[in-house]
Image 1 (tube, one colour):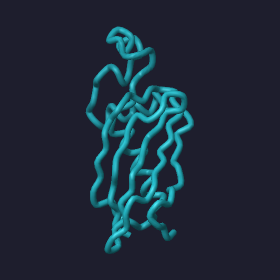
Image 2: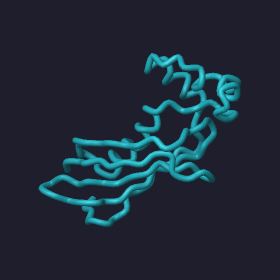
Image 3: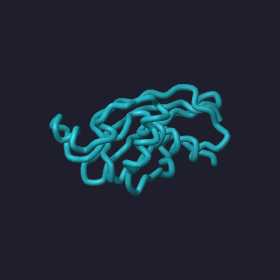
Amino acid sequence: MIYAVGDTLPPFTIASVSPEAMKQWAVFLADPNPIHLDAEVVKAKGLGDRVINQGPINVAYMINMLTRAFPGGRITAMDSRFLDNVYGGDRATVTGKVAAIEDGAVTCEFVLEIEGRGIVNSGTATIET
């Protein structure tokens, strides 16, 4: 697909963030932090009442949106800022728009939003097309 500056990218949605996937990612990431595995630990720390998604999973959601919008493209730069947690059961949607196009590279701005709570991550990425 050909994009122009200002165009919106197709959204990427996770209907319900999976606590079971968090368990699998904990092994893959070698991240045994109990806030990803045990809601009682999250409650005890005063961080809510549901397990908290690992940051790399949230980044993967954003990468999925970008790679679907630019099949065959290559992400050459990406940064993001974590603003809040993503919890088990949340409905998460990544949206983005084209901010610049220069010499075959497209720069996009994107956000990860949680239904009912708002933006929890924002960032930019450059994709070579």
